[in-house]
Image (cartoon, rainbow, N blue to C red; front, side, top):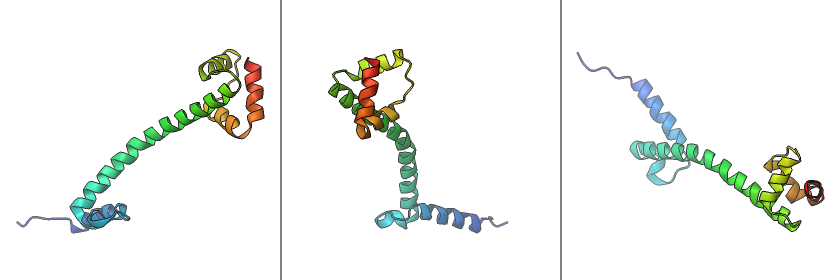
Length: 114
C-alpha cells in the first residue's frame, strides 16, 4: 500500500510560515528551510525581548526619577524610602511622568516627603 500524505495540510503549514517570513531579506523570505529557521529564531527573540523591554522601561523610569530627585537635593534611594514611609502609593511610571512633564508637581511630592 502506498504511503499516504496530507498535501493540503503541509502546503497550508508552509504557506503560514512563509507569510510570517514576509519582509525578510533574500532567501529568508522564500526558501522553505531558510525561512523556517529565520522565523523560529525571530519568534524566540520576540518572546525574549518582550521580557527585556519591561526591564529597560523600568530602568528608564528609575533614571528619570533619580535625575529629578537629585535636582531637589535627594537621591533616588532616599526619595523612594521616604515615599514608602509616608504611604504615598505612587508607582515609578507615574513618578517618571511627573518628573518629565510636570516638574512642579514632582517638586511638591519631594517637599511632602522631606
